[in-house]
Image 1 (cartoon, helix red, strand yellow):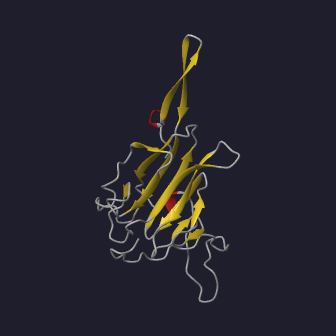
Image 2: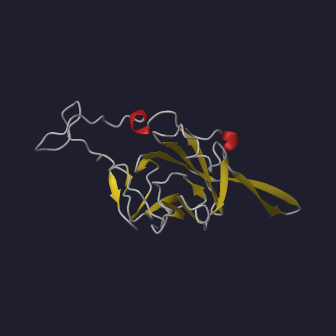
Image 3: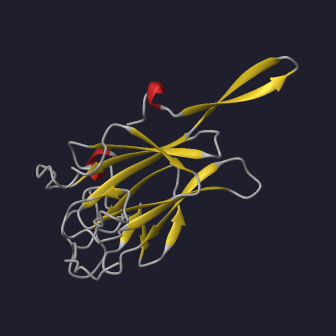
Amino acid sequence: MTATSDQKGTHRMAAADGDNDVDTEQTFTCLNIKMYHPLQHDRRIFSALELCKRQEIGAEEVVMFGRDVTCCKFKLLHNKVSRMQFALQFFKQINSSTMSFEIKNLSKKTKLYVDGLELTYLNKVDLPPKCLIRFGEFQMLLENEAGESEDKFAIYCEVSRFSLVQEIGYPVMLAIPENGPIYQANSQPLSIPPTPPPVEVDENDV
């Protein structure tokens, strides 16, 4: 899942030391994204993405995912994806050198789940170092690979052959009782709610 060492972004900064130039190397923070959709055999869904290639992005940019080919840097070509589905923004925690990401739901009709947390329209939250996000039938496993640079970050996308919910060991839902919560095999309540069915999106949806 994690990008290999030759995929990690680096840039060099020259510093004068007397008559000698000293090169220092800084790594880019890289957000590795593994994606899955049950109908991904239709190659069009992910066809507009540059897969298995690290893309370097300016630290000040807000990166949008969605169906709109003009506004969205990462395009998902599916008619049930909103024109603008969600946005990622790179930031630094207060009184910390740690570089992080936040995610905002931009869809009025589709809820976004970050692990078990439900985000409705314009809700946003800081991303954990590793998490699963879900909307409609899409699943994305996001992993933050820490870097040092404050000028740029990188995003690396790939497609999983298998459901990510199963791959990372989320519990499998059993039958829903008429009165009571959903239970899993070990009789403990399921902590992550099922994703509601995707909603057909019209062209005016943001």
